Length: 43
Image 1 (tube, rainbow, N blue to C red):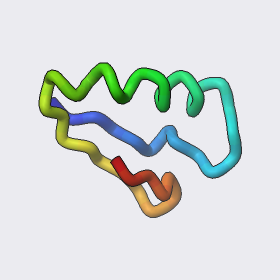
Image 2 (cartoon, rainbow, N blue to C red; image 1 turned 90 degrees about the vertical axis):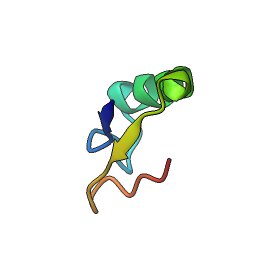
Image 3 (cartoon, rainbow, N blue to C red; image 1 turned 30 degrees about the vertical axis):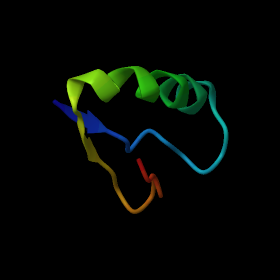
């Protein structure tokens, strides 16, 4: 499963907070995280 982290922005938004709270529950699916330089995400 691929997870797009491009929505994780530097500024706090509702979508970013929701996504951050959701990510731990995806661990059982062994996700492959995709990120852009703009998201500065590290998972």
